[in-house]
Length: 549
Image (cartoon, rainbow, N blue to C red; front, top):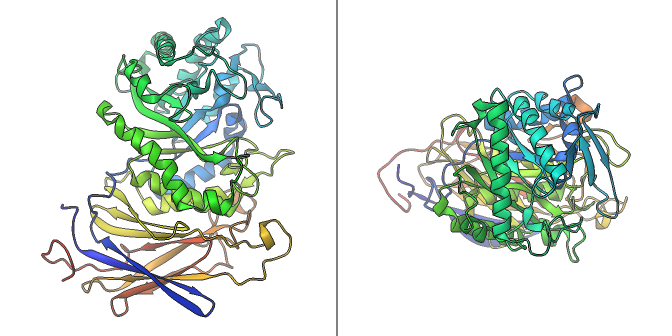
């Protein structure tokens, strides 16, 4: 079917107290224009879990973490596939195998290197039990290259853990392997360099090829069924960014895919730093321009690597590097950012996004266990991921789903359209104008200023009639860390252990009618909505290629 068609017009107006200002109108096709992305593959909304935190998130055979599994199921129920799980991060390159260790992981935190995760790590065979706790889940397991590529103890760990990992990930649980996390920082890492200043793309590729050759050798002995063309492969190079000590393009030119076993090009991305000067909720996270600038750099890299024919993903990403910042990465504003960020990634052709998290991390989607640093529970960013999943719908049902980015004039708002089988299905409006529930977002005193409300008016074609349903991503303000809901649903640990619970104090079931060719919806500052066109909206087919009838 043609991806050009009839044009809609969206008129955005602002209603704030008694004043009203007219904004510019925006055209929207009823079928996907050429700017819409290619059909989105399954499990777009996925996760990356810190290697040292994985036993906390997943549990073990005798004590599985059902809370985590419930949250993964919620997303799977919306998109048709549970999120794919990448187990890796900085700590994968610190992990040394100890066969005599009677528990999963023994980690020592050195605050001078990182206060957030251990940098001296030993794992035992029971570590791999965690791969058996979440049914119907596919995994990426990260092997230690930081020590494995140039250290006899690290190399022995690689030889010892490949058989354990492959046996744990048999039966369809394995997605792909990963060898090394962010090797572009190996010679410059703030946690301590593990390579000399002479580290370059050629040396990296040589060590990567040697290490993956050893992985394959061990697989041939322990799990030969995982060495077929269909089952054996990697995501790589898993660089921290595009302009660090090693460069992605030079790495491909150096022959990293010599053995034709890279299945996914993986890059990492953070929009800013937790302690970076000038980082704010409104100016950094709830700012569509910042998101565009950050993601477009990755999209350009993906474009430069299209000649490889390999899909491009963000294998690790989140809001602010160094595990996020309190009051920013763990607030409702971060949920709105995540909603915007993921949809924009999809719209520019990034094929999957793995949101990174670890135990006690500020930007985590949920805290899997109770600790003295963080409370067990569902965190605001998770609700943004649910909204992304709802916007995409079932990606595993044989339908073709595309996302279109709709440019807006104000950098504090964004909009997207979802097309399913070449028909308009949903429209999202994300109002990222900051409204704090409390004074200055830090006080216990409630904000006395009324919350502004923006009215968006859609001018529908004459042949459209009926109603659209409205779903809301809502909290009391951008600074809220609790009381979050999606379409009236809560996924809090305290209610049903992360299973969806319908709240009685949230308005749901809203609809908007087409009246005089217009559809109007109000969106509070620091909130978002999805309009569902495919439920009751009726489209009458007629022969035209563009414009209004």
